[in-house]
View 1 (cartoon, rainbow, N blue to C red):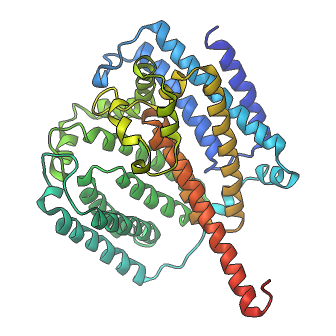
View 2 (view 1 turned 60 degrees about the horizontal axis):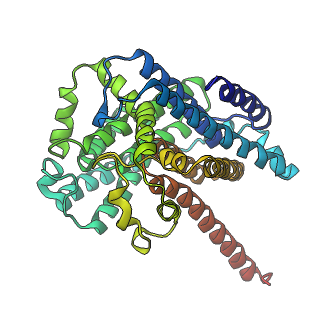
View 3 (view 1 turned 90 degrees about the horizontal axis):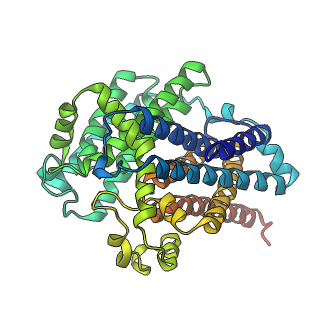
Length: 424
């Protein structure tokens, strides 16, 4: 009964959402729901059927009773989220409801003529990134003792931007020159992986998304995209694992791949890390986290960390050096009322951003729509296994981008009106 009632409510709410919100490939609401269900189902399978346990950081040892209580909390959180989506839909204007009722999958694709200059740009960008890594990091990009080397942060930001641009160009030329695109892509990711940064995952996703939207509206491209996204999140879990190694850089990270016991175990570990690990972190967070509302509001504060008390509390909000308290654990620790309002609000926010994404696609602003979806996907993944502040910030970034574009569009309209003599 502990899981049966919330399971039935989830089914009913899902059927309501399915009837009101038309599914399309990059729907953040459906991504949230399906990821949540995948995490719950996989966690139940892992607890009852998978042996021996990975027991990463010794957090898997909990009783069956407590495990099921935590799973039930996750299920109710999903119920509150879905209720928030339904509330937003019911309160929406008729025009907004119409946009929810349409599928936008066909709008994701474009056909762009790729000539040789794009390939030249891609080669130049990738070689520039490789050169900059050695210029900024030196041999530390290949091997070092510490996870975070002392390097100029401004230069690392430039490298990240150029890496994203390189990934975008490689995605564009893939259709015309598959071999060169893949060779350059693997070179780009191999050198970038030496940082151990999660931004490498973003570069992979940029490549996957651009490759997808320029690949055409056909079944094989959609299947390839689904597989690539799945592998990308497996890659993300591998990146997260690297920081716990004794040495860092391209050489130790690639060597670690060869030291995995077997392919099957590595696949199961990545599934565990992506979908199951966060549930156990949450279980331990509920037990060990202190209920302090100031810490909760510091986590939710959109200001940079130096303007808040974040650095005062950050080290206290961890199970160990590698495992911070999870978002879900932090929220569940506050009690049922705050949990209800938090996930209800998250559902409303996701529904609002879903509407904005669909409007962007309606106006053929695909790249911007993809950026918002990617940020929300990162919020989902981080929310399941990482700290509250890091996860929530991706929602703030999404709204900041939308607000910036809105201001820019308004300014552009005003400027055009001024030139034509119609400005007020």
